[in-house]
Image (cartoon, rainbow, N blue to C red; front, top):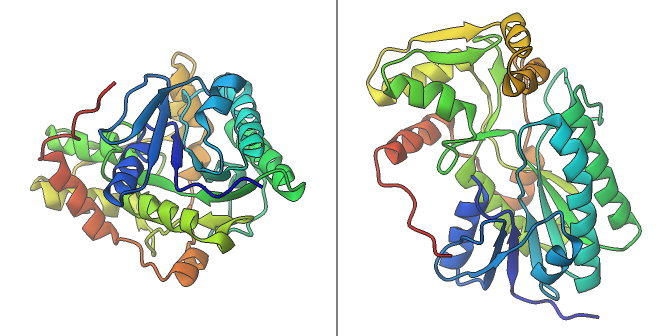
Amino acid sequence: MTARSPLHVILGAGGAIGRPLAQELLARGTPLRTVSRTGHGPEGAEIVRADLLDADDVLNAVGDGATVHLLAGLAYDRRVWADQWPRIMRNVIDACAAKQARLVFFDNVYLYGSVDGPMTEETPVRPSSRKGTVRAEIVRDLEDAIGAGRVTAAVARAADFYGPHAEKTSPIAFLVLQKLAAGKRAQILVDADTRHSYTYTSDAVKALTLIAEADDAFGQAWHLPTARPALTHRQIVELAAHELGVAPRLTVAPRWVLEAAGVFSTLLREVAEMAYQNDHDYLFDSSKFERRFGVAPTTYEDGIRATVKGMRQPQSPPVRS
């Protein structure tokens, strides 16, 4: 039996969750190894360049007895996901099994599909998209490995997110905050008056550290703390505009526009596939996590205020290669 190591390994350390998670762990004095294709990472971490599609790279990146966070992000393309996600998950499971490392997989809600009512950890897996089908497949692979005793793992699931470090990946960032700040109209997809849950990035980061430290958190899925009640996108635009000191102007792109534009744009075709998340209330319930860990999520008012404040400050500290 390999002894538990204090080392944490972040696979996919350059994204909206990986970067602040690395900073949080380093601030706690946790030994940290960051793994990415670029070989960039924060001061104080051991930095490893690796390709998660290469089994040997992943095996070499995972430390004996470590805690591994799988936070990889892929191009927003169903074909890329179908090809690469199963290979990545297989490589990570095999490496964690060989090194007796614990795994925390950062997941999204795509596997649930179109849901009537709040999503909980007990919501049936009924994907409505090809990307959702891929996520369901890799989660099933991980659950099978857990059930077979090959790995000790937990699934940490978030809604769409917003907040610090998510300026390139959060719809609230690039469709609302950045457009309003530039004197333009916020752009809303499908319907401005349906409610939609968003997870604040700082809450997700803190929750990942809590899961990693709790032995009883492994072997199950957790919805990361997310504010309730969810707001409509119109309300989000109003909050953002108030913090920016501008008028809450918005425009709505109907589903048919996304589908028509998808004929000419791969990205818009992928966005149109997920439009079901915006044509009715899409609600995320994190009460299980809140009860177990005694954590209250950041309110949307406080989260958007902090995000706007961050937009006006210098960007993240430099990384070294």
